[in-house]
Image (cartoon, rainbow, N blue to C red; front, side):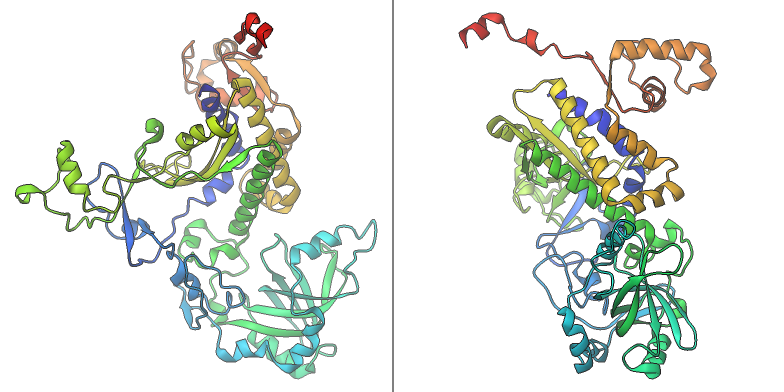
Length: 535
């Protein structure tokens, strides 16, 4: 469907490689998955040897979805409230999780029981033990100038991780973040106003360091300090999990390189960068789903494991249960080789495999989407896709999530309108929900990000015919060809990135731009007048 080809190669490429480029770059960081039993080995199609070492560890797919259970179970203390994990196992475990720097996170049986002490029950029971998320408190505080926040003066319970602690003799200031917002909230601990008095104060300040998890009961008040609208006056605090050897805790109050964060995968989600990436991706995904739902589209879950090479889009990861170190023998004890194209040989080889035929991780859900669009009208797929190209650039990912709308009885202009609406809806959702995160990205990763997103969300997309775009580029290149990496432009030329940027930034004055065969619809001419008369 030409309209969908444009959809994938046009403005979506522009949007997600500029405004949201940083989120994609962050998520390319490699992860190591613990080996698990009954795993389906994955290898690139056309390769006959398994990649050794770390890459082989990454190339494991668990048929029961238990890949990350080991790492999550061992993060003691910090997951003992809600220990979410993939698969059927759901249990608590205590113990140590050692980092490369030597620091360990530990929660003992005693610290878990502390949360259930009688004194805590009496004070925390007023809130039912239910925490208020820091993000909700900070959003509520934005209304202070117009009217008093409904939470001001009320008791709240927050639970999160300590980012900083400044302790004086009988007064301490603790910043707590629970991941629901970019900023944390300040907790003021006064030894004379908290349950347990000085003894409790000294016990807490001696044990709590950066990275520890705590539960705090206190009153939300307006803050006299700069840079924060509210703070919590602590009335009681309980330690949920402590960090042993806190001075060796790897996430200190400084900027860490992405290379370093790759070495502490179990902690990097607590950094500003990774947490912000996750919140922005979540808002983008929700904005996309809401848009398609509002337009009457149905969400299709296309298969992840497939026998189809959709569009020949690239090298595919193979899914197999055959041991590459001990492949099955064929007739006459022959081993299968790259030259075995005979159908009978292939059938004999794959009868030992799980699916009795070659199977791969999908490169696209388009084939499923087209069949359902021809039955349900408008559908979209939004799920993980995989490409086995061995490329190390930021524009090539081994795993990514792809959006593929399919519309029945539509032309290329319907597709462009749908694409524009989706991109603008996603950008609007991100700016509304993740303003602080985007400001952080604009400061440290992508200058002018929020301004470009604002243009995408609020400025109508431009449309230009391909032949007109080529003409304008030729005129511009003639002025000074030395400024262009690819100055040879003619009809039939595939536009390079520098050409696309000039069209959007100069000709389109910053607006996202469609380049198409025609710049306006002529759909009416596709229907013969005699056919309309019959209707």
